Image (cartoon, rainbow, N blue to C red; front, side, top):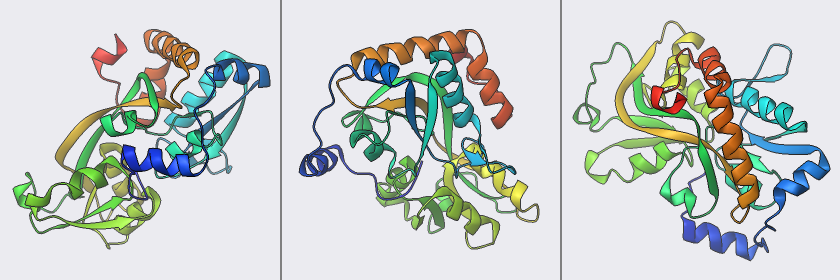
Length: 264
C-alpha cells in the first residue's frame, strides 16, 4: 500500500536501467544461505502488519512472518526499513533480498518483479467515519479521500476519472492515519485492517469500511530471474499455510483468519 506514485513497468525498467541495475544472477538463494543472513524489506509504520512496539522493537504480522522464515531457514534476519514507494526499488538495487511488506500482487508490478504464492490477503476499501452515510461509489462522488502515495489504492482511485473523486495524497500510511485521527480526513483508501485501527487511536473518530475496492493476494516480492529462491519460498509458504503457522500470525494481529481457500 503507499507513497510515491507507483511507476509503470516501462518507466521502472527504464529508470533502473539508467541506474545501471542489471538482472541478478539466478543463484540468489545460494548466496543468501552462504551469507547466513537474509535482508527483508518491511514497512514498520503500517500497523498491524509492521510497527514498533513499546520496547522499540519491530512487531506485526509481516515482521513475525519474516522472523518465521529466517528461523526456519536458520538465518540471521536484517530488516530493511522501507515505505510503499521504496519496497520494489530496494530489491531491484540489491539493498534487500526480498519484500515482506503488505505487497499486493498486481499485473503491473509483476512486470518488474516476481511474486511467490500468496501468504496472506488484503481487503482494500474506502473507509470513513461511522457517522457518515456512505454505502456506494455514488455516495463518494465529490468527496476527498486520503491515500498513501504509490499504493494500489492511489493508482485505482486516480484511474477512476468518472467518479469525481478528490484525492489527498500522503507520504506514508502513518501520516495518512494521523490525518484521519486528527480530523484532517474523513475518508481513507487503504486496507480494512488499517481503517479499523483509526478508531483505536482516537475513539472519538471511529472509522469503518464503507466501499470495497478489491481483495488482493499478498505475496513475497523478489527480483526476476531467481527461480530457485522463488521455489524455496513457495515451498516454505505452502508448508506454513498447511501447518497453520501463517494463519496464526495473521489472526493474532488482524483479528480474523486467512481465507479458507488459502489455508487449504
